[in-house]
Length: 213
Image (tube, rainbow, N blue to C red; front, top):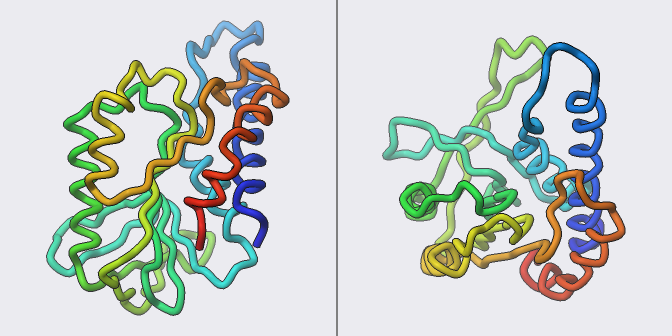
């Protein structure tokens, strides 16, 4: 398992380069089919982030995987679920920025996480082969009383003061640690990787302190 700061640094740089590739491939071509804005890479970022943080470790990590709670009919989709020895060890919610986080929507999302942590266990299943026709069920995962919860915001840019107005208070009241990876840049392909490296380096100690499994 690599250093958590290094994993975060490499993932935001990867994201910036992916967006740069999108611009070059789809938005600056001479086709008569025009792409007006970049594809969303949110879920792909979640996967790359989790993979760089935990690949090769003793943790099992679920990314955007439906889980079934005992007292809820519909499955829920937490961003990143961290499991060890069949016990839930951590939850991570990941946002690119706060540009689209409305207060009511955020409250609903945090309420879902509260349902998870108030449950005693959850179950999940995954596809067994590339045909995606059959799913393999796994044993129930025990949910202890105290688990680590991290709310990751990739960039403060484009937040329209939402973090200070209500995001921080709601997130921390819900028991999450708030982690902002970038203060002054956004990995949207419009800045170079050196600027992003310099920006995230300012958060090195905090990243290592909060992402600590």
